[in-house]
Length: 268
Image 1 (cartoon, rainbow, N blue to C red):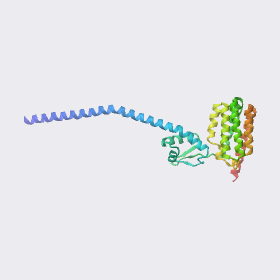
Image 2: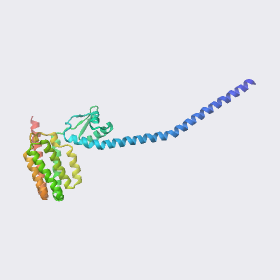
Image 3: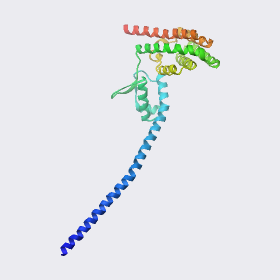
Image 4: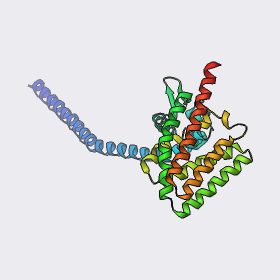
């Protein structure tokens, strides 16, 4: 009988222990269920903050990188090392990666598997195609600028044209090229044609003279200077037909120059 009671007591203790353990497991599971949503919410908020920081850094980095690419800070086919860009621009690696992806879609950068990113080069054939598209849109903008520019805009534009001529006379090639960008950007703005302006702005990030500087060295070509003067005179005078014709002549000269360069390159 004593043995039977002992077994019953032991059984009761075992059952109690199992109940206690089971209860403990249940409490743990309840606690885990309560903390899981809090943990997921914290993770989501952290991810949102990271994306916000990356977006803010990217908004600052992209214009700087585009400008430096256009201004020849980086040479065609030069490697763009993420760590170097982080240091140079004081930004994050995540922002650099996003910027390189965006610049790749814009045709400014090319990426190769296991080789990283580098500045995309421009062939002569591509430069000719860009100039042909620009000729169509620049002619449109020149005509619209002659029609739509305000008196104040015409005065400012004339000042840009005079500065461009002064840089050419002084053989300040870099200044001349910078003023050339301002000259055309002013025409795009005065035209008030957002679609044409958006397309032309993309070409400004890949300026032909940066890839093929030979015609502009050691001094800007005199013909180009006179072409700019005729464009400016027509726009300031409010003559859309003359402005369009002068712009067509200017871009045709560029195309002809590139075609000659292409023929010389093919023979050498």
